[in-house]
Amino acid sequence: MTEMKTQALDMRLLATSFRVTYADMPLLIKALAVVHEAYVAAAVEAKLIAEDEAEVATAFSQAIKDGCYHEFFKVGVYAGIKATLLACFDNAFEHYAKKHLCADKADHLCQTMTACAGVNARVRTACHLAYRESLEKVIASCEHFYSVLSAKACKFQDVVKPARVGLQDHLPITLADEFRGYACALLRLTSRLKEDRDRFNVAAFGLNDVGLPDGNDALANLALSHLSRLTSQAMLLPSEPFDVFVAGDTELIAHAKIQALSNLMWRIARDLRILCSGPRGGIQEITLPAVAPGSSIMPGKLNPVIAEMVFSTVDQVDANHAALVLAQKSGWLEGGSAAVMPIKCFMDSADLLSRTMDSFANLCIKGIEANVDHCADLAEQSLLCAKYIEQQCGKDAAGKVFDTALAKGCSVKQAALLLKDQLPGLDFEIFGHLFKGL
Image 1 (cartoon, rainbow, N blue to C red):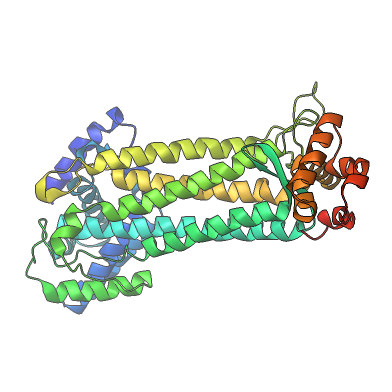
Image 2 (spheres, helix red, strand yellow):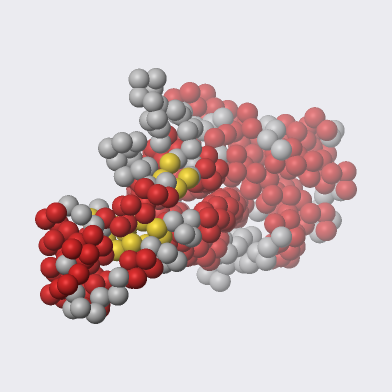
């Protein structure tokens, strides 16, 4: 314990040279406290510690989860994420135990808890809990965002507008169609994130630092049972222990799906920026809420700051994915990744994207209004409406109408009226139904 305390103090002296410390990863520290609490309950059940010692150890775990004693974790992350992080945790625990127990009991408690599990067993398990909670946060934001998109789709069901392919006019659709498209993609990605979340249910209990059994299976099984209770999920022991410490594909794939989600947010933000462009020279099919009004010399101008915030978030998530991929290559042989970047990048991406999605939904999507008449005018002006004439009168007739509309700068409907005598069989009521109930 003294050696670990000295190590933590030495690293704290160097923390000022590294802006990122373990204290910047509260979710991982909280996860480590949950693992600690599971082992405390197991140690009591195995009669390794007394009830009063267990009360102190459990109270410490709760204090850590409440955000206390994080000053012990202000150590630069340059040394990796395993032994150094655990040294910080055990140092804080020793400090707490000595405040609430006599010296002999405090020493006994700290030594017993340290001997319960190795570094990898505790830290790797905590990483899985942190990954899972990070994904839970993103999934909750996805479900909220989906509900907001669905509500808008219902509201815009009768708003007819032109579709666009490569920014070129196309057949009329409804604004609801676009929002349903976003919602469908979001629902699919949410389902995939849930699948990845459920893969982070492996506890490395009962294993030493190279993945071999540590000879304390009974205590490991007790701790596993208590961890399942504390997390309300069925935690499992690894089917191949060595793989738990070396492989990083699970978090890499999960983060790739977070990146895919961020790119969906980018697409939605990009589309909304184009659709609200104006107020005079742009598309102006929709109006975004005035979160940041334009300058006094440009009345009516709205700065789409929430959409632009999404762009910045996506840039950061993309950068985090690149860093995560590189960091996964930092390990050697049995040690797996030696860098702090995989877990740091993962948690940062999940937290940033979750908060961005909530702001995007609440401050932007909810307040969108459709410029109904303008949308209908643009839809009617689309030259691709000639395709409806093609269905009734053939390709040649449709081509004549198209060319006339283009030459005279009028709508397809107006061009069809001009060529009415040349369009036998054309039911002009199609133009009355074209923009209703699509």
